[in-house]
Image (cartoon, rainbow, N blue to C red; front, side, top):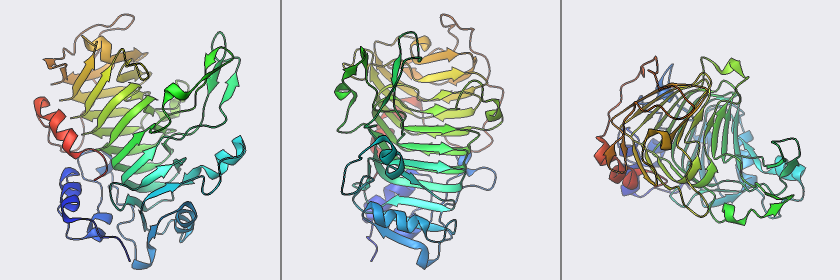
Length: 382
């Protein structure tokens, strides 16, 4: 029997996601992405909305999850997660190859993956959407995976560097994805536990949620990103010019708390950000804030009615970095309670210029002064 959501949680989940209130869990499970972000465009994102009764599964462990995802391949399905699913199962990862194989959870097309309540989620898991379409991930906690076997690259930088694999979620070459009411965090394995080797800090975390290789029509809404360094990378590399014309992503009503950088860092994509709340401290002992928005090669960002509460930040140049791109349009934003001027020229970069596009969907902006309280009440699993 499927677990029933509490009526209050149902109402909050549906209202904060811009969809109609539901009377029971299946109505929530079958919801499609609202039309207030890129995932609602070009036919929209429905996930497993059309799943038959036989293609609705409740799972509590990694074996049950893998079995459910395989059944019917790309046939519409709804997979409900109860409790915490450990991708490692009953035994720890034994090698780099073992972690790469057992830690990865690949989602098929036409799938809705949703938590039964606010206590559902994943540890030791690398959720991968690779060359699939029409996927919804909602109401889950994700502890960003800890790479047990990071690799030393002596040719990375002037003196070498440690590199890690595995994101909390990777959207790779996939289209029409809605990520909603999900939390991403380093959780119990924070970066102060990294240690050092070869004279360098060892990296055990990669990204939280990355979008790359011409992925398209993505919305990330009402989610929480907390305690992480390199958070959201949009676009694989400067040389990957095939990303141009893709990587259309919306972030709205999300909380970014104690994140060092990349919320997001963008190449080539058209990224719309509105009503997000950013909280950080440039002197944080573990996750010292560097910047929020990174404007890379070919990137074009629009930022509206966003709130930056960053201890030690004073201007646009403290929250935005320009990595070869200048198309950054900002309006209505606040930095530490004051209007954030969008016109500052940052050291080493040209003055920001117009994005050159307009979001093709209807959306409602909260006034910036209401964003912090609204995001606090609505973002994350419910």
